[in-house]
Image 1 (tube, rainbow, N blue to C red):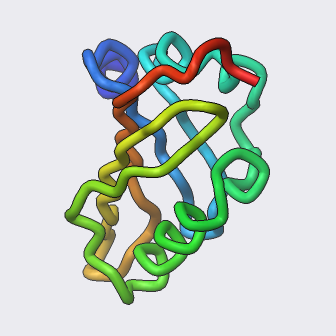
Image 2 (cartoon, rainbow, N blue to C red; image 1 turned 180 degrees about the horizontal axis):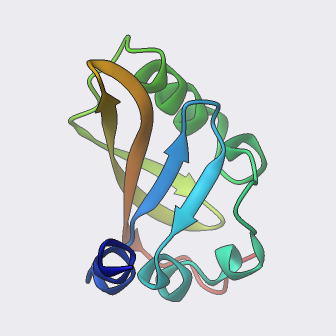
Length: 111
């Protein structure tokens, strides 16, 4: 519970994604900065949420083909967002990844 509380209270948006591309966790800062995700339940595949360019990059990270350390700007629901994608490893193999999106430009109300 302490680990969950830490994640929930981080001052930055954090999304946990499983090896299969399923969103398993999103902290409250994600829901505050990107209100559209308030109605996106855990278990939703990233293809249903993010643009193709980010899904492709996340997939490469999950496949172990990309280390995912750089920040990528992309358009999402009328916003310009930069995302950091970091693989999560267990026993030296990728078991998922962490996506940390940062709102760079608010394009108005979310669609």
